[in-house]
Each structure stands twice: as C-alpha cells, then as structure tokens.
Length: 381
Image 1 (cartoon, rainbow, N blue to C red):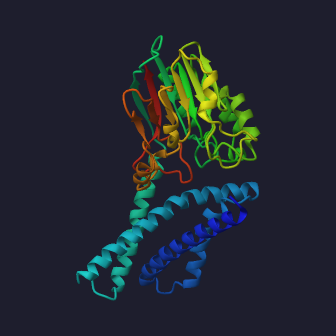
Image 2: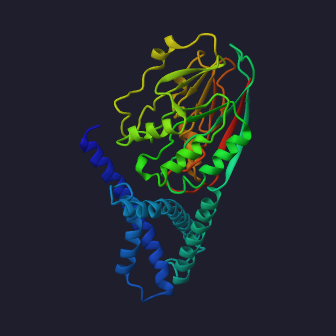
C-alpha cells in the first residue's frame, strides 16, 4: 500500500465522519433552537465540532496527559456518535414515512423537530449508558469438545481469554477480576489468542501492576499466547518483554509440547497494525514438519478468517478478534463477514473444532451492547 492510498483512505474516512457529524449536529441544533432560540449556530457548531474532533485527535501523537484525556473522551464519544447517528437516522426515517402517509405535516412543525431530537438523544443515552455498564460485567462460557484421533491421554481444562486490549479505556480496571475468575476455574492451561495490547505499550497506565496481576494466574501447564493485529508496532519489544515478565509464553509461529498431552501452535496475525520486529507469518504447511504426529494440535490464530487454512491435521482452533461486533448492530455485520464470528463451530465431523470468543475486553468505545465480555472454559476430551 503506497502513501497516496493511505492519504486517500484517510481523507475518505474523514469526509464520511465529517458528513455524518454535520447531519447529526444539524438535526440536534434545529431541535435545540425550538426551546433555546438565542443559541447561536456558530457557538453550537464550535462546541459540537470540538467534541467530535476528539475521536480524530486520539489517533495522533500528543503529549502524555493530553493524549490520555483526548483518548479517554474520544473513546466514549465513539459510542455516543454511533448511537446518535442511528437514532437521528431512525427518527428521520419514521418522519419521512409519516409525511409520505400524510400523518405528519410538511414542513415539520417546531414541536416535532424538538421531540424528534429529544427522542434521539434519549435513545442514545439509553444505549450508551447500558453499554458502559454492561462492559463492566464479565460472563463465563463453557464448551465440551471431544476430539477424534489422536485422543487425549486424559481430559484437559483450558481457559481461553482474548482481546484484553491493555491500554484501552478501562482495560486495566477489570484485570484483577479476570485473573481471580480464571484461578477459580482451576485450569490446566490458559491460552490468549491475541490483542493483549492496544497498539501502543505506553498507553498502559500501570504496566508493573498489570504484569503482577498476570503473574498470579495459576495453571498446571502455564499460559500461552499468540499475537493479534494490535500487538505490534514501535513498542513491540516492550510488549514481548512485558509478556515474558508476566510468565506468558508467546508463540511466534512456533509450537510447544504441553507435557506430552497436546501441541499448542501460536500464529502471527496476518495483518498487524505495525510490524512484529521483522517477523512475518509463515504458511501452516511450513510449520507442519516440526509437529509431533501423535499429539492433538491446538492452534491459536487471532482471526477466525483463516480457519480454511487448516485441515484434518489440526484438532482445535481458538480465535478472538471479532468481539462479536461489540455493539449492536455491528454484531449483525460480523456474522455476515465470518464463517463463524462467535461460539463453537465444526464444518464436518472430521474437521477441526473452532471456538471464537467475543473477548474479555473492549476496543475503542468501552461499551458492550448485545454482546458480552467473557472468559471461556473448554473441557477437552
């Protein structure tokens, strides 16, 4: 991808985002003007524009405290913006139908403009308020998976977490509870298929505390991780050091024999944001010669879009990435984009089992609507 493609893509996104905000702002201002006729359009545009700009500025390098404040506000605004746009659009569609059916007069009376704007704001407040609260709740999901051949020497309890996004808004606040819940499950093995970080290691407020908590995970055979698309970039060496200090073994297109029970294979993500220090994803065929032929194989691959890469030579694929859309209606979109965007899937009885988790954290907006933060317990037999 050349520089002009990046510039054009960024300009297009800004144009769409700016147009959507103009649409929202215009509708809200017209409703506000009904009850506060003295409000100046320029003042409203300035205030609304500065609020909307925080989301754009959060992606740029800024001084430490300013960066944190802008990123924090921009994350919440991302969710508010989505539901404001959908709510305003929904009220406009209803009003359009009403006018076509001659149930609503045209032009719109001032009272209708006010109540439609107020309804959009109230709907937005309801969705975002619920989403913020629901993102603090952690659910537990359990699957029983029976393998074909080779069989396990004994049942194995695996705990799967993904998409911690350490450094994102409120990501560290739930870490203590996550570790406590994992330990209550008494796992043999803990696996993390990617997006442990949120692009920039320096966004973690208290790395020492986060590392201390992760070291408290108790397992029989250890904690293993692969990398996701947010786990690369300029701070990649710091990420690897953090994981080593946290007693988490990162598999960089590598495998490990877990006490003669299973082979765990960790894949590099296919499209990282930034680089993995010069490392690139290999084809799975290149990894096969080094694998033990008589042990079940578990693959940690961040994106579930690669499941067709694996055949009968793999027993279980564990992924995250999708967040199951994180907020409605994005969950409907991920369901269309992926063969499996969430849950347990097996193409046919001889194919690998696939489990995709919605993740234990949030990206961008610290909200969950119609999806859950979750810890997954897998009993492998």
